[in-house]
Every structure is written in structure tokens, then in C-alpha cells.
Amino acid sequence: MTDTFVSMIALPASPEAFRDATWADVLPFYDALAALPLEASSAAVEPWLATWSRLDTLVGEAGTLAMIAYTGDTANAAREAAYLRFSMDIFPKLEEQQVRLARKLLAVGWSRPDLETTLQRFRTDIEIFREANVERFSRIEELSAGYQKLVGGLSVDWDGEAKTIPQLQPYLKVADRAVRERAFRLGAAAYLDKRDELAECFDRMYALRVDVAREAGFADYQQYCFTAKHRFDYAPRDTEAFHDAVRQTVTPAVAQLMEHRRRSLGVEVLRPWDVSVDLDAKEPLRPFDTVETFVGQARHIFRRVDAELGAQFALMADEQLLDLESRPGKAPGGYCTDLAFRGRPFIFMNAVGVPDDVNTLVHEAGHSASTISPRTTCPTRGCARRGTRPLNSRP
Image 1: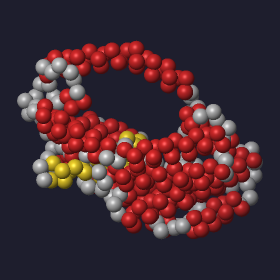
Image 2: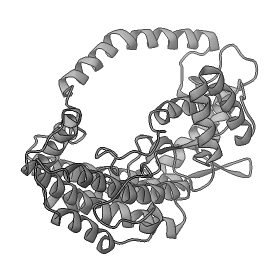
Image 3: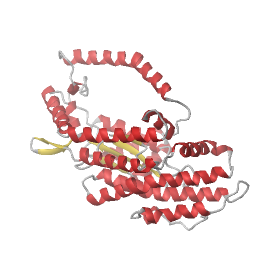
Image 4: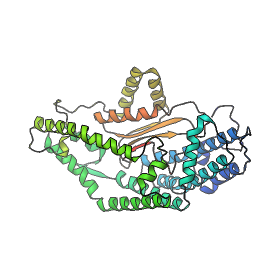
């Protein structure tokens, strides 16, 4: 927030105040906002919106920090409990308060041209909100946390050394096909050993999401999700058309590339452990050996591309807004999320010293470039809806 920001109610100075909060600690702030009088012609509307926005960013960042901590160490019971407190209790109930305040604003007929999309989002949220879904979202978040814990704890034995599944990636790039196959099968077997638990998790989440959609009056979860994510400019039929275009244009091209790869490797049948090895290099390319080197090289790359982009990435590195290395207990995949109160992004990934890591970091940094900004008051900079889901997550 700017130094001249004046809140209509007394708010904490930072998200730290909500770090250990329960819903009973959070609700009075939203009750106070709901109790304030509003009129469309009143000069109080915009300060009220700014206060709502500031409150959302305070609670939202506290919850996002809990998510970051948990995904960084899913075996830590205290971090798990903190994450579940936000994702299962606070955020599902906060959804109801967001709708409550949106109704209050829309009821007075206030509008502003540059916030018309925001007001459309509010109208959509009101339309699809169902109290019965609050508990369903809580259960979905519990299952999601369980999934992260399950896959974050996977490891394999590689010549007497325990390795995470991401740490097998370098072996998928070596010239020795037997080594590649061994690495692939070990990683796959680790997931297959948990097949029943993963299938149960999926089935339960699927059923809950179907129930959420039907409760809100939608035929299926896809229809519901497009609406809930405020996809006003395109519909499922548009993505289906895109999928058809990919199938007709890209899929044949990929098939040709795979056939070229098969012939180049001299194998009768191309297997999953054959798709990552470099066809031209005698030894696998290793772009970095340590995360420190990785970050240093990334600083140089971004600075060469654009001075502002370089400065933004340097700021993230200096403020320790990067969690890049793979380690036991860390959730898989990568994401960029938003620390809304301070106007900062955070990048999470599982780097193991392969070229794909560079692609991932550049990709996630692309998301982060739109997040770094001066702290401003705007009613759109609220916490993540329906839990502390990352902005860009790839399990």
C-alpha cells in the first residue's frame, strides 16, 4: 500500500499478524467492513474498497506463505497443520465473505468504468456461490494437501543413494539406454506403488467437484470451472476447437519428430525413456551444478534480455523469493504464486541440473514479471480464491 493509505477500519500492519490466525480471528474484520454504510454517491466507496483489498492481501499473503512452507517440506507436521488451517478452514469460509461484501457493493449501484471487469467478477461470484459448497471446497483442499504429501515423500534407491523422483531426470538424458530405462522404471514404480491411494484421492476429488458444479446449477465441473475462473472471453467450445487444431496440425508433426528420433537412436520401438536424450550430444548437457550457479546465470540471462526484467529477477533472488532445488519431502512440479500484500512473486520448482530446469525457470519468471509492482490499493488484488492454489502449478 502507499504511505498515504488510510484504512476505514483498524487493520494489522503486515500478514505476520494472521500467521497463526483462526477463522474466529479473521471474521471480525469482514464483519466490520460489512457493517459500514455505503451509498453510490458517497466518497467512502473507494476507501471501503481499498480497505477490503488491503484486508484480502493481508490474509491472502499469510495463507500463501503457509502454502509455500508446506510445499517446500510436506513431511513437516507443523507446516502441514498451518497450511490446512488456511486451505480447509479460513479460505473456504472467506469465499462466503467475499460474496457478502460484493453483494453490499452491487446493491448500492456503484460503478467505475475501469473496474467493470471486477464488478462482473463480483456478479459471477454471487451467482454461483452456494453455502453447501463451502464444506466441499474444504474437503477438496484436504485431499489436495494429502496428494502433495504423498508424492512429495516418494523416493527411490539409486545405487545405495536415496533420490527424489525429480532427481532421476539427469539419468533419462544419458546415452546408455539401459540406464535411461532403469531410471524411468524406478520413477514409475514409485508412483505405481501408491496407485491405490492416488486413485482414491482422484476419485474423491472428482466426485466432490461434480457435486460442487451440480450444486451451483452446472451440468459438469468444466462448465462450472470456466465460470468460476472468470473466463469471460472464451468458452469450453473454444478450447475444444484449439484441441482439434493441435490434433490436426501439431500431432502429425510430433509423430514425425518421434520417428526421426527412433531412427536416430537405432531402436525398433521408441520407449518413454528414449524421448529426453539429446540426439546430438555425446554427453548430457549440464547447465549448472548448484542452485547458486543457476541463479547467478539466470541473473545474467534476464539482464541481457531486458534491464528491467533483470532487475526484477535480481530483486526476487535478493529477497529469497526462489525455492528451486529438489529435496526429500518437497512437493513435485513448479509454480509461480503471488505474495499479494507486498506485491512480490514467488517461484517454486525442483531443479536437478538439466536443461529443462532452465526452461522452467524462464517460464515461471515470465509469470512473475507481471506480479512485481509497487504496492497499490486495488480491489482486484485479493487472496487466491478457494484456497491457496498457486497461480501456475504443474504437479
